[in-house]
Length: 513
Image (cartoon, rainbow, N blue to C red; front, top):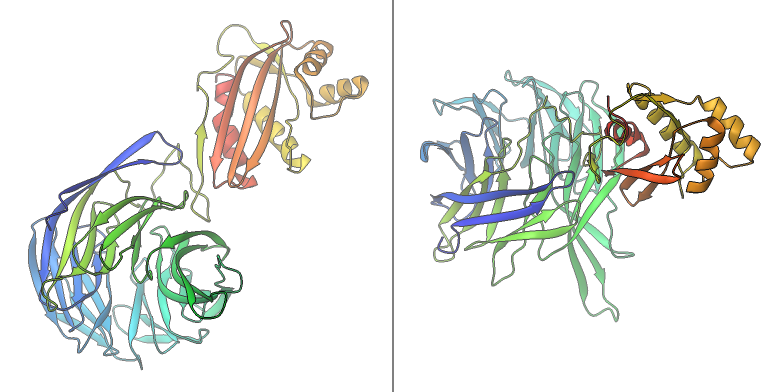
């Protein structure tokens, strides 16, 4: 591929400084087939499995750049590939209604599950490799014990083809996406429905929706769904089509974002392990290319040109590899898989911890960031007497402002440089001066401070702008009546429950510990 050598991305990752990651074209794998129909990279990032529309599976060692096995067992197109968590087995499924289990190292077929009555399109293994779920055109989801292959039961709830399946990180839930525009959360043990959500991610009033594809974030916090939106144009002589990628929260079933503006049906896409980006096929007839979407910004930050129609995209769990398959424009019976090395991107680990970037149990997760210096405003000398007033909270419930003040007092009370004025004393002075809890000017705060015999007064505000929550604190010197410093913290994708994390970041910048 002449036009691709090294593609460098410069991206601003929310909650951190300017970050850079790069893609380097490491290999181009030829495939003697018209179309590569699915691909998967093993959990350890070593193996790439790819399959074609003729039923052949190719297993490659990415590091050694060599083919290990050519597996033949399916009759017809292969639609799904997955590895077990131990990197010992590969599972495949296709139009022949069979699920085959392969030994990864010998290349031998270990088992064959033939309980499906129609094409199998999607597979998922539980995190402990004990259960296997499969979905496809027969509507019901089948569940087996693994690796024995004993059929455990059927999950009946969808009315049309099931496109996507995924077990939760703990294996106690199973999420499915169907052509019937339903997102169903299951209890795989009881085979009961926990929640059913209608997919209604419309950007055009009154439009129809067709589900094209589905995938899931590695941490199972949200599902991505490729959607074709269509509506009759004015005059009734033509149709308007839009191609969107919508994201739904695993825990609540709520729509959390929709990327609108892809140039073709999203039949394949990949979510990066850090959940910052989604890569789609954004080709035109003349220009086949991948689009790298920044999910939270909702914009395309980079494009990657390719030669030939794109058929599948996948990322490795460790964020070290990106693979995209495309047809060879010069030979309709030949395809190729482009494999890039990725650097500068975080992979997914189930038990990772990060003191700067926290994760919520839903949505894209939140990221707390300081907008001001981290040095404490009070960090030396004798203890200072300080009063924390209730922050302003325009557009938010007053209880939120009170809670913020209480949490901040709890943190500041641990500082060796601060003596806090008790809240009942503050309340008594406010009542004597006939001041409200919030909305105080700097001069009002100074007057309250004098009555309390305080050296400092802390005032501030908490504001919500879309999904961004901002807490601003101002330290007022009572003697000079001047603001000695301001500290501010923000949280992206914030909910009110994130205030505690924000306060934990803010407090040490006000008074040292």
